[in-house]
Amino acid sequence: MRTKIYNAAVLTVDPAGHVYDKGYVLFEGKRILEAGPGCGPDADTAIDGRGGILMPGMVNAHSHIPMIPFRSMGDDCPDRLRRFLFPLELEAMTPELVYLSSRYAVCELLLAGVTAVADMYYFEDQVARACDEMGIRAWTGETVIDMETCDSPGAEGGLDLCRELIERWKGHDRIHPMVAPHATNTNTPEMLKRAYELAESRGVPCMLHVSEMDYEMSHFREVYGKTPVEFLYGLGALGKNTVGVHCIHMTDRDIALMAETGAKAVHCAGSNTKAGKGISPVRDLRAAGVDVGIGTDGPSSGNTLDLFTQFKMIASLQKTRYHDRSLFPAREIVEMGTMGGARVLSAQDEIGSIEKGKKADLVLVETESVNMFPRYNPYSVLVYSAGASNVDSVWVDGKQLVKEGRLTEADLEDIRNRLETAMTSFRESAQRYAEFI
Ligand SMILES: [Zn+2]
Image (cartoon, rainbow, N blue to C red):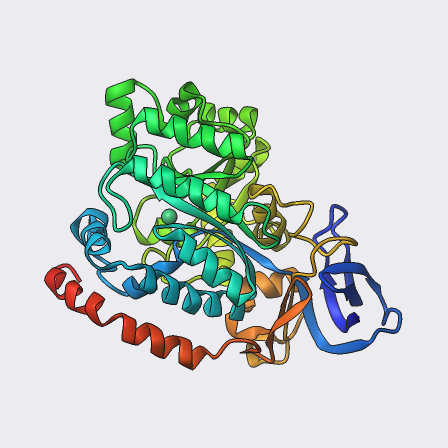
């Protein structure tokens, strides 16, 4: 069955940057057939875009979606990771809570026009299951960390769970496994090397937090006389499968090493600045040829899963960092949030742009609301004016999952009620950390 969306400004994000001010997109099943100016050919179903903006589905390239129960808890508490996040996760996270939180988070992602998410957490098989059921595209990575966690006695167990996750999900059409060592400083060098080798041998991404913390930087400087990126390079753990999240404290040599090895970066502007950690040198990374995607980080760190919030922040922060208003024009920001994320996940041949043969992951943003008038440059509208509430319709694999701002397949109220019930013992455990939260 052929479906056509017409009467919309089509931002293809293809290599030539085609924009069809009054255009259409035609797709059949899961794949895009064509896009162009005008009304296009006849189709079985024709959807009027009502003058909105039709863009490729956004890619949230880094999150911890099961952390919904932590949102708005201890937001201003220093060293929250060790004071209450790690202990509370160990005590209160269960497979059921991860599963129900993930279902809730996917509602939020879809309603914000995010059609693909890369996640790393515990009980990641439950995240994969939830994402599969909800119809979103996902990269799911089991966390490997050198301490006891809610689903493993230590890093060795985490690596075993990665292997199981890969066995179960490799080859799935929408759900892709990853290996996810937590960070450069929370694993032994040996474990980082083994985690990367597993990812490389199975052809999956190896996602980890890199050059994020001040104490991470001083630790590597004092113990090894290196930066975390130099350290990963020395281990043989920096390569085309590496997805380095944050990359805040980067030297020129770090950036050159990432470019040389084909390692990727994910920028989480909201999470990084809320924590006062710094602003990643995204301009320099991109200028060196490093692929950069955009992530929100988890709902505990960034409080949102919506990329529109990041778009605005990235533009403002990068212009401010380099004292140059002309940097990061809106087109580049939208490109990072779509094709950039696709490249980071090595999925650029399948998603990230509106092109013939690619997956029909599409977002229609309405321009009828009060904040959306007038419209000159559609990229500017998306970066500086739009918010998740302007998302009208969303398709993943050609299936419409959001229509007129509402989920078509999922019952949000029921999903929230089930999560609320499952959070009872989590809330009780959280009382123990009341002084921090
Ligand atoms: Zn993170």
